[in-house]
Structures are given as C-alpha cells and as structure tokens.
Image (cartoon, rainbow, N blue to C red; front, side, top):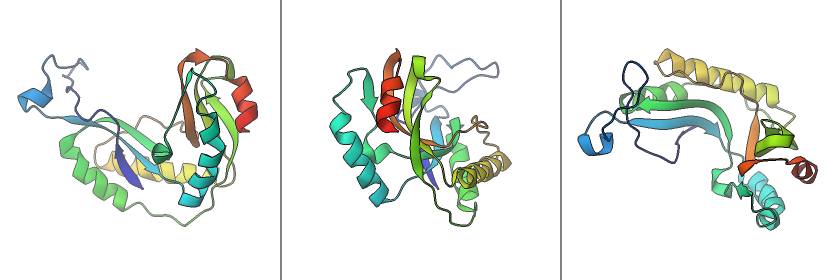
Length: 178
C-alpha cells in the first residue's frame, strides 16, 4: 500500500467554518495540507499489457486525457486535504494494514458518472474485487484511528484509463476497452 500525494502539494488550510484561508501557506509558513490517497499498483507485466492496448489509442479522441502508465493505480482510500502533522501517523497506520495475497483481474470497462455524460473511462475489476474492497475498508479504518477520515466509502474498484476534458458520451469507448 502506497501513500500518494496528489499533484498539488500545498493547499491553504480551512478555518473552523470550512472556508479556505485567504493567505498562501506556502508563503507564510502556516500549516500545510497534502492531498493524499492510498493505492496499490499493478505488477509490471499487467502494466505492459495495458500499455500495449492504450498507447495506440491516446491520440484517437481529443476530449480524452489519457492517464500516464506511471500513474495507473487502484485507489484504496482518498483522504483529501491532510495536515502535514498527520502524515507520519497515517503512514505508520497504513504500514500495519495486513491481509492475505489475492488475485485481481482487470476485465471490462466502465465510466463515471454514466456513459452518456462521462468524465472518467476506467478498466473494471472482476476476480478479486471483494478482496480489494475489503483491503480498502481496512485502510480507511486504520486511517480513521489516527484521525484521518476518508471520503470514498462507496469505492468502486477500478483503474482509471482516461478523463474527459468535458462530459461526453463514452459508449463507443466502453465497447473498445471492454
């Protein structure tokens, strides 16, 4: 299980009412928050196979931004903005999460939120989805024990392949990816 920092690394903190601070914490030395999520990464041979499939399609649709191979992962928990003082306890908590090995099969395709107005095109999981969901629950529970809530209790195991620049029908892509 890897703890990943989302692209932006420094976010303004929020006051007690949920409003963003008007000052830039990167400039003021105020507490920083990191956008974090926990994920597992497929083995290299799976990435190789997926890459052979995706690479020739990267230029086929201007509306799709294809995820780079080194960013392909299966999210276990999204933590959002986490204060930097929670980073070490969170990492220790995740290091303690255990489970038995399981096989996970990437098979099928899906979109979020729906095929007619999709924002995300993904590779679905079949065999092993229940085990991955159970691992996700253990990760979220461990994080909550150290005061870091997650916001994806309805996690649907998947590997994001592409994001639409604007919502669009991706039914054709479902047939291609499936």
